[in-house]
Length: 315
Image (cartoon, rainbow, N blue to C red; front, top):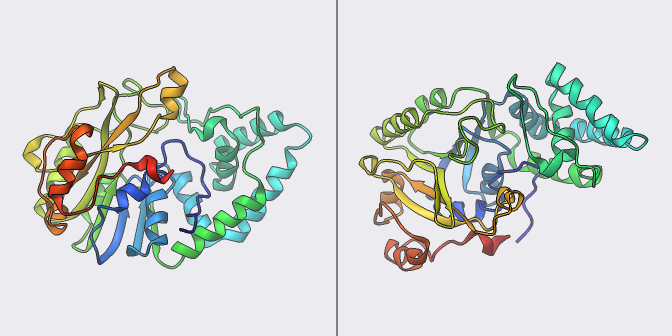
């Protein structure tokens, strides 16, 4: 299979898990909607497989959305700017990075953000309490080479140009306007791993408000998938959704996460994937409220969808 382009290095991206998640897409999707788009890894992967006709990328992080829009609509101008910026770092790599970071925090200019993401430690987004990007540079490397990034930018533009709308709205505003024929993929800030505040995001979200929003989608019969809670070994992260909203939960083997490695853990991380009742019915799958990984293969045999999805197979 031809490699899927990925121009935005982004820790927490669903790029490696995308093949597993796409197994649960219904056929004949009109529009794929991502209220928490991040690096848009899932939309890019879905476009590469021709699984949707149109796309809506939304994220509360405005510079990130503006960067996605430039990738899609102005690929060569963005690639040329990045190449120029990348070449400027040769005489003083670290000093150059901090200068670009200061300018980005002042201007919020999306092309500067692309350079920072390609150059920072483990491509990990971090913000301070004032909402300013404060991640340090990776001293071992100088970021994605311009020719590689140019190919990825043009690859994504070829997949999404003329098919994609962009916005930076509260996710609830997006969900209010979705329509039958859409499939919504929600990847909200990951629960339970960073205390009350997660430095990767501008702000957290309320679990109760998210539940209410999903119930509203259910009442409209909207197809949706949610990546939400998870576990590492026997340790569960985050509050699962209540059984009353009728979601089907599947665990996906996400391998050993980068955060686990940094914290000195060796356990494998499993992420939960929730399917809406409308999607479960469309896939002719039997809803199961909870599943342990040890039984997932046998359980999925009852779904009539596919054999168990283990994302590690696609890395």
